[in-house]
Length: 193
Image 1 (cartoon, rainbow, N blue to C red):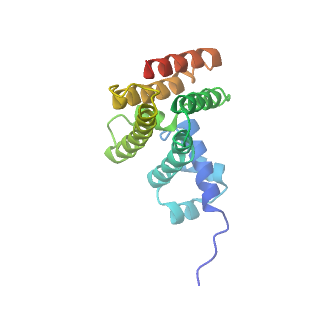
Image 2: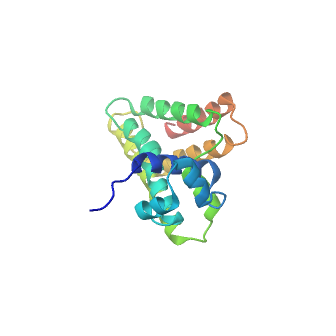
Image 3: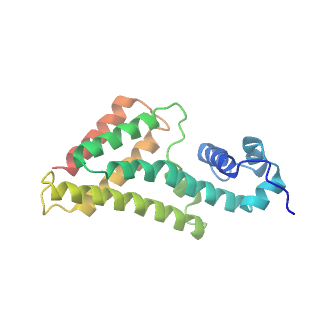
């Protein structure tokens, strides 16, 4: 009979995610993950795999827990513009929380460049999920007359996605909420013009 795990894998993955998010893949050693999770190396490898597999699982956790959860809330019934304003308000608030961690998706793309196709495939999928959710939101705005029917919702969704990523990059060096809100307000105004 196998031994029971002496740790909570979900909690360990959350802790690993925060470590990778804060420090990046290259600057995070397996020893750092051992320290942040409180789980020994053998148990980490036995549960999640090697460092890259731990990273990919942590990355998917980030995408599911923060980015997609916020976008799913934005696609609930009601005013699409108000949902977008609320989404960007949460983005500014998170970007000014003092961690200066930015977005794990954007950080990953910047760190990996084109050196690891598997990691970049995960990042592309994450960005596509964001773009698709924003596109659905803008199409809802069209259906309810908040946005002209002939507006290119997909192009506007891409612009909003780029703004979201840009705000999180800028927040790493300047987390002035007024500046970040101004950037977001301009993007929302452009999306609904």
